[in-house]
Length: 121
Image (cartoon, rainbow, N blue to C red; front, side):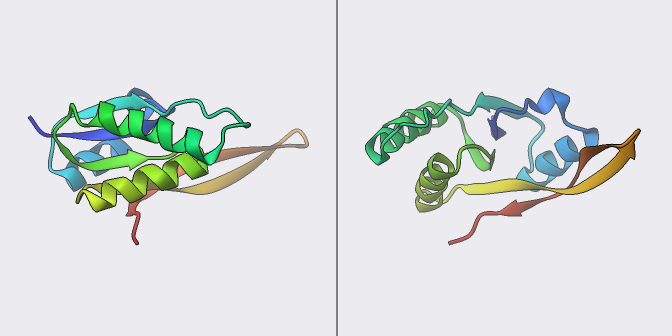
């Protein structure tokens, strides 16, 4: 069975319905599988990033998917996205609109899902 992957630290179970439906529709699937984005130590070297990325990519190989929503630490995301594109997978990122509300002198930001945008070379 083909699925869409959510590779982030934001479980799709907490997404708004329109965001879930947008990924399912884009990917042409009924299910989203959550895969936790790994922790990246701030002292990690470029070689460490490659090692972590390859571990994630090996984990992803156990799923049948074309679309993957990926958001996380920038250098690891870049490496994973590059490899996914080489393998004809379609990585996307969630785009949001920031809505700032001021309450009692405190600014509170809320982020509203707008759409998914494909990563491109």
